[in-house]
Amino acid sequence: MKPDLFNAPDYYNIDDLLTEEHRLVRDASRSWVKKNVSPIIEKHSQEATFPKELIPGLANIGAFGPYIPEKYGGAGLDYISYGLIMQEIERGDSGIRSTASVQSSLVMFPIWKYGSEEQKKRYLPKLADGSYMGCFGLTEADHGSNPSGMTTRFTDKGDHYLLNGSKLWISNSPFADIAVVWAKNDENRIHGLIVERDMKGFSTPETHNKWSLRASATGELIFNNVKVPKKNLLNGRSGLGAPLSCLDSARYGIAWGAIGVAMDCYDTALRYAKERIQFDKPIAGTQLQQKKLAEMITEITKAQLLAWRLGVLKNQGKATSAQISMAKRNNVAIAANITRQARQMLGGMGITGEYSIMRHMMNLESVLTYEGTHDIHLLITGLDVTGLNAFK
Image (cartoon, rainbow, N blue to C red):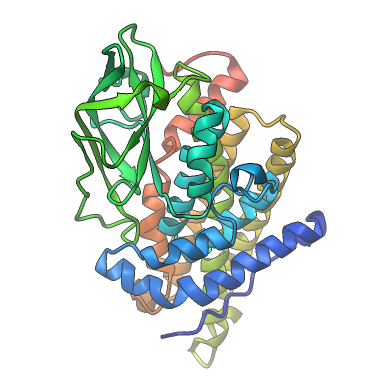
C-alpha cells in the first residue's frame, strides 16, 4: 500500500482568501481522507464495492449537511466550508464525494428548505450523523436532461398517496433508508415525497457493470403502488424549480470537488516527473512535460478562484443557477483534461492502480454527465447571456 503523499498546490496563495475556520475544516477533511480513504479506495474501486465503513467518518468531519443549522444536526458552516470539504473528499474519490453530496444537497437540502418542521426534526439529525442515508429520485430511463417529462406519478387516495413509476442512475439507492422522490400529481404538478425503505412496493435494485464510480453504490428506485403518508409530502414548494434548486446545491459542491481531482493528478504527475529518469535526466526537465505541468497548475488556479468567488456569492445569497452551471462545467472539464495529461506523463504506470489517475479519469466521465451534462450547462450559460432558449 503506497502512502498518501499529496501536497496541495496553491500557486496564487488562495489560502489567504480563506478564514481560519475554512482552513481548519479543510485540513481536518484532508487528514481524514489521507488516513481513511486513500488506503482502501483502490481495492474498493477494483472490486466495485462501496466502503460503508466510511459513513461514520464522513459524518464526523461534517460532510453531511455542513450548512444545515445546528438545531437540525448540521454543522452550521458556510458554503465555502462545504465546498472545501467536497474538494478534499473528491480528491480521495469522486464516488465517496457523490455519497456525501447526495446526502447533503439532494436529500437534506430539500427537507430543510421545503419540508415541514416535523420532517426537519424527524429526518435531518439522523441524516447528519449518518444513522440515516438518503438518495434523490429525479432521473428516469427516458428523462434525463428533460426531467419535466417524467412519468412517475402519485395519486391522492384520501388518507395517503399512491406512488407508481421508477427512477434510474440513483446514487446511494441500494442502501438508502429514505428517498426524496420527485413525481407528478393528478394535476401534472411536480412535488417531492419522502419515501422510506420499509414501505411496501418500494425496491432499489443495484446497477452493476459500471466502469466509472465503481466505489459508489448506484441503483434504481421502483415504486409499485407504494402507499406514502400525506405527512411525507414536501409541501414548501412544487414545480420543476424545486428539484432544480437541489441540483444547484449539488452542482456547487461538484465545482469544488473537481478541483480536488485536478490537484491530486497534478501533484502525482509533478512528483513522478521529478523522479522518472529518461535520457539521463528527470522528465520534469523536458519542455513538453513542463508545458503539461504549467498548463495544469494554471487551470487549477483559475478553477480555485472561480470556486472561491462562487462561494462568496453563495454566502451572500447572490449566486445564480447560471453561475453555478458555469463553475460545474468549467471545473469538471479542466479536471478531466488534467487527468488525461497526467496519465500520459506517467506512461504505462498511469493506467495501474498504483496511482489514482486512471480511477479519477474514469470517475470524471460520470461527473461530466450527472447533475447536468457538459452540453446542458453550456446551453444554460448560452441562455443566460443571450436570453434565447436553445433547449427547444
